Image 1 (tube, rainbow, N blue to C red):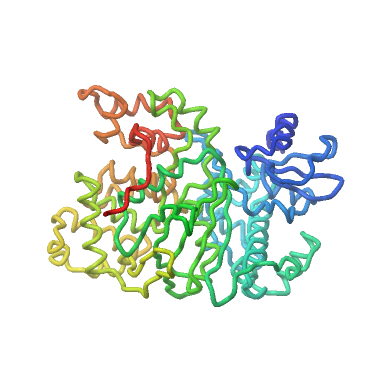
Image 2: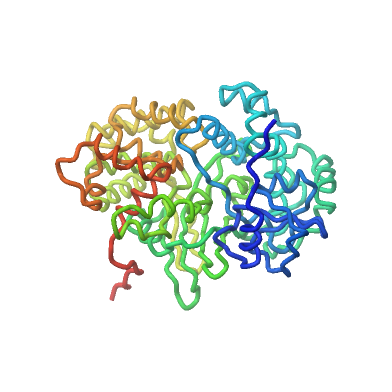
Length: 511
């Protein structure tokens, strides 16, 4: 059976010696003299090249017998979003990785690769073969590493009981968790306790990203679309110099509906995001960490993206730090995409605000003296599915969109539609297009932001065509043809084309 393509050891060592954050998460270094594997940004003394082995994934390093570094913490590294839009094996592998990265699938001490293969519509043997060829490890080895690194992060960054950490990391028993942790890392879980959070207060975790990252552009995008009471952009102040975002969220975990708030602050010097999570959301912590990474597009690889998009017309080809803004709730994003059809961003924001005020669930305000005022949840699928069309009409939503919103909510409630990005992309897009009032533009927009598909393309978008300087007579087919040179990163091409040419800055405070 063929092995994964080897990494260029000389290039990896140069990046390691330079501690180049652009390569963070793209490879890991196992040091044979210590038995430890590190990120390229680790601040320890650079080891001799003869003592270094390089791995594309943390799971490969652990399968080779290396333990994670306690200083650079491999669990903080951005993920790998290398992508192919044409290779069937690569697409299937990426879909499997997406499912394994979703904490909702982390159940039981012995997760079944056969169940994963069945969900993907392939044989267990075929899935294992693909993983061995392309990842160098089995699906279960990859999953075990994901769960252990998540447990390591929770043990380090919080004071959650070890039993709770084991449960959140997908281990059915504390005994099994302790045994696997000791076997793999040579440590007892309690030896990693050093967090400053308390069970009664907000939990804080750090997440890494690869530079460059245009933080101001991302914040401006969210600021222009923010719904009062649900989300808020946090511009730097003297008291808190780090910019960020805060918002409410409701989700299901542990057979319960949880609600609370999430705050994310950018720390550009460390290339990290500091995330604070309400204590009411503890039972959903791994899921929230996963969603925050998608919300802020922390796993993007600017080097790979820029290598393809540098040929775009100026200034789009120069915006290497732009990210694709995601979401914490795919259903909410889909609703807002429908509301925004053929109207301005400001008008869509007004409709969304009315919808939240009429149907959203009130929450205790999250204001803690830090300038945030979040006191409302976006309506759930069940709330919207149970709403009479006439009531939506009273909010200024036209009939066609009333039908689209209710059909969308019903499809999510009956689990016919998965909008969190873990389902089959082609099938999800087909299902979206079949819903009343949802055309190609809306389906592609949902794919780009909610489903995290890097190759979505809104060929009919007038603003996109205008920004690219395309003739008004250009057909959709011609736009699709032009965009083929930007695959598989067309979602990033769309964001670059939408980007205003003038520098972005925080809005001036009202007098």
